[in-house]
Length: 226
Image 1 (tube, rainbow, N blue to C red):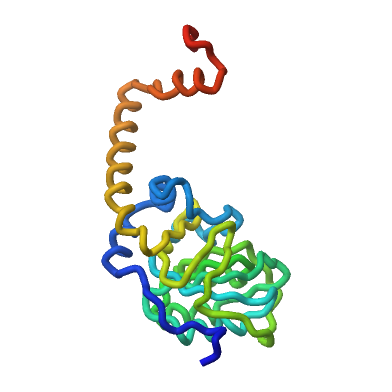
Image 2 (image 1 turned 30 degrees about the horizontal axis):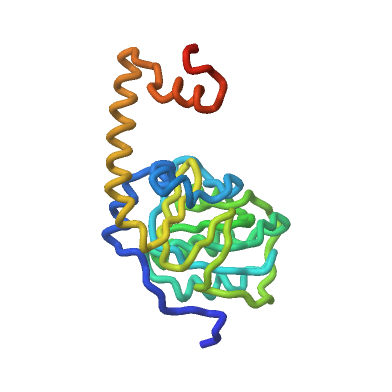
C-alpha cells in the first residue's frame, strides 16, 4: 500500500468514546485547557446533530474527493471521517450518495473543512455532518491525497484515532492519549455548572471571581467595587 495511505493506527477506545459522548463539545474543550475546538466556520448542518468517535483523517486537494471515496472503503464502523478540504467552497466534496454509503458502512459522521451538497436530503437521513457550508457544484475525482496522516483542520492538529465530539456548538478534537484524563474533569465541570445554574435561579447572580478579576486587570482599584 502506498505510503500516502496509513491503514493501521491506535484508536481511542469504544469505552472512552461512550463516556465522552455524554458531554458537550464545550465542556470537553474547557477541561482540555480551552484547546481542541475547530474554527467555527466548520458547523453542523442541523443543530440537533451530534457525533462521537475516533477520527479517520483525509487530506484532499480543493474540489477533489477521490481520497474520500478511498477512506470510506478503509473506515471501520464508528469512525468519523475528518477531512481537510482546504476550506474550499467552490465545489461540494460530498452529497447524498456518499453520505448514504457512509451510513450504510457504519461510519459515525463526517467533519469536513469544505462544502457539501444535498443538505436537505442529508437532514432527512439524520446523518451527522459538519462542514464549511454548502455548494451545488460537484467535485472532480482525479487528484491524489492522503489518508491516515496528521492534518491541520480549523486551527487544530488532528491525527487518526483521536477523539471527535461534535454538536450544535461545533467540533472538539481530543488527543487520544489525553481522553481518559479528561473524563473526571468533564464530570466535575458538569456538576459545578449545574450547581451554579441552580444558585443563579435562586437569585445568586453575582460571580465571586468578577471583582478580583477586574482589580487584577486594573479596571478597579483595590478598594473599589462595582
